[in-house]
Image (cartoon, rainbow, N blue to C red; front, side):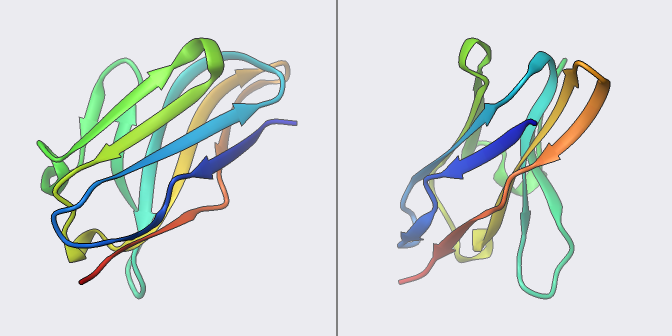
Length: 117
């Protein structure tokens, strides 16, 4: 059974930084992609950053957020700089893996990021 566990959320002032991490455990054969989504209250879940064959970012986070992966440890990180109140949301780790039974998608439980003075 594959599980994703996020860490690193919290409360930060505008202009501050946070680093989110997501560790995957279980029988993973290969990684197609890992990334981060977020969902603010009353809004739909949206892609923030994804790392697969290419790296993609939501336009509003380009230049502020950086996604990185450690494939040997099945880790994905999201370094968030120059945070803005609009970045406040629950952030979810996402993974597209090849496992023993084939291709499957997984989600973490979410970690709260609050940007406020």
